[in-house]
Image 1 (cartoon, rainbow, N blue to C red):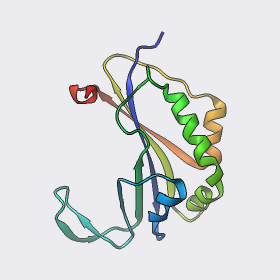
Image 2 (image 1 turned 90 degrees about the vertical axis):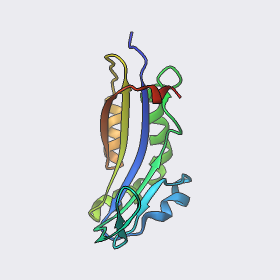
Image 3 (image 1 turned 180 degrees about the horizontal axis):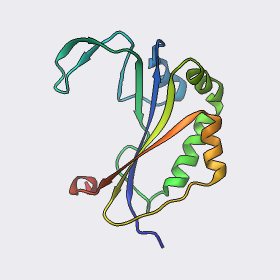
Length: 146
């Protein structure tokens, strides 16, 4: 039996020239981060820089907080979002064809060893959407319990 762990998932989209803010309404989710190509960069403290972004970026958190696998397995969560994103397959493919990219970033927060398996069918669905899966593994901290 696998020990429970927590995860967070975000959808990230990049494009060399297109304003991606329309994805809020297209996908029905609000982005938390983003910019347009040519916008001025900011330092982590929010101070504008003289440098400009070389591509557009859009990112939305799909998990509202840290989600425990006792609440929802990662595999089920990913399948739910694949089902929501599949109607937009042509648009997501177009982003890739134009030099952009889409990815689901999965942050895993582990107190102990954990494992998960993604079925070939699930992975094939990601491939059809031309969507990458990026996984970050982090030690759990007290903040995730809040």
